Length: 237
Length: 237
Image (cartoon, rainbow over all chains, first blue to last red; front, top):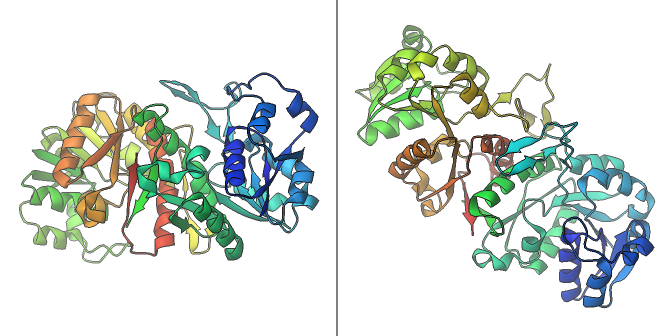
């Protein structure tokens, strides 16, 4: 397949590297390709410059967001951070028309001055906006009526999403939600390529609310197990 | 132990029956014992009258909320619905002083006129209030500074909480959160009596936000599996 990945952060890179490894043609989108390639320092998350990642993963095409989306033959993975996703995707709505967009963003708000962060023992935890009465997945779908949005990947670290076998022999559960069964099957097929054996369809995109709100539970479990411990969630039935 | 269970609904009854089966002395609290005993019709959830439940489970004492709490020798299980919990518990703060209170309520708001319910395919889903920036567990703890509150049980149906072995051989995960390690151990000991083998301490009571917000994920998974399917969540690591 020709797959587009929008974003060059750590999560996006996990998908890019895995898709290349699986033999797919990967088109990476960034806001400003020249600026992305000009960076020589790690970003604030400690992620090395993307130019170095490209050198380590030959054969990847770097484009603008719009050109990357247009180069996809059906599947686009949104790795743009939650705060900027709706604006960035709306700006390329024409290029995304007719495609399937997988959204895994959590709409975290990190500004402690204007928001109501959790005063956690380990520092300030972000809150979610939207939350409960709406979701980022639904906002993106409303902004892109000609694109079929599937919420997925959001309940795991992206390193685990592309390598589920690394945890507990791979017997844990991935969730998908969206309005269209065919595109959810398309995403499920990709997940099977990634190594997932248990993919649970949570129904329509309204379940994106539940999936995004699960982010705090994911964080709490991760902290309880100890930073750096990888884990999955298995729906036992 | 002498355990108090506050509430006479389906969730409370699961705990009452299990505690009696385990040989504990159970003191049940209700707002108005005479009114509870006078009921002869099932409630709006279809739960049979409590008088019938008492006839089927001899040896249970029915009291007011305050008298039941006072009769406990340490452990109180709060089965009062989320909407009424803070007011009802505040009114008996003196009787709860020095005890451990296990709270499993979800602060659902069901009023579709004044709130923002989810227009789900299966009807109206409640929203949470408080949500994200506070939790019911923390509200109860603030209202009861002389009581040690532990949030637990909330991520499962109560029928599963008292019978974890019924699902997947019992290999799934229960979560606890609270400010005090000794009371979390007390609750963990009770969970082990119930049959739990994997109890994960999520740290301070701020994790009650994550646990309550997980309620929508629990609902979405339940709907995806089909109404009446029981399930558990295993943290695979």
